[in-house]
Length: 147
Image 1: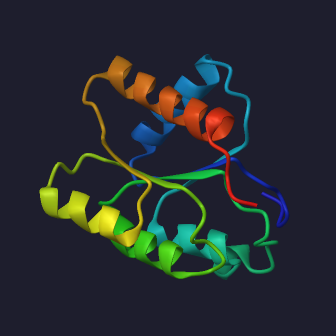
Image 2: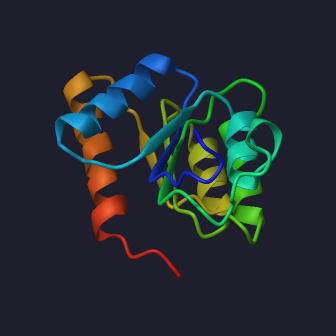
């Protein structure tokens, strides 16, 4: 990825299979947007803040939505969410938590940190695909982001 490329959906997911299913579902429904899949919280924060492997990236180019898993190596999703929502640079980026965790403490914590949505990943492939497509359609086509 070039330093100034703008993406529409940032998928932060350590499970490559889940990320590939999400991308395939969006592609199958002809949701023609730019996606970036990152496998851990460190890479996500580096991308968003233009540090580490993304040093020098134009951070004014923000994703339209972030799909964020919680259970990840290095830095977990709750910590990533906390850093996103506590920075004036990134706080307005919508974050959809897409996770397998049904723990009420995770749900409450994510909403208290500013998550825009919390979705438990359906186990069924078709339901998972449908959920991802509906997320994509809503955040990319219907949502009006702040300027």
